[in-house]
Image (cartoon, one colour):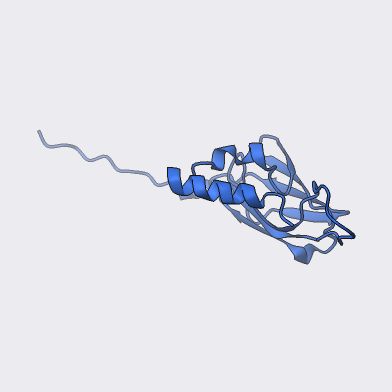
Length: 143
């Protein structure tokens, strides 16, 4: 049972009326982002903590990094239902979340570990390579 089913339908109707993704900026007020994160930064590093309740196997979550964007996808395990559902606050099922990082990061220097449903990531700032600079010759202009 999706507690947000009617909200999704209402949002889709409003999107079709207003066009595009009109309500995306308001979605966090209606539905908390899944999974929940804490992010900390220093001058050259980002520390990201992701709450993934029920996930014990790293194969159930995927991490993709591009520039200063990180995307998490996976599935939170369903809770076995016993009886009639009265209230649901623990979200479950498929998730996909894009997280904007404070700066581009190095793809070759990322560590991630999963312990008791907490994914911990350590990312490092991408420092532009000084060798990528190109000198531009200035030509004399004819008068």
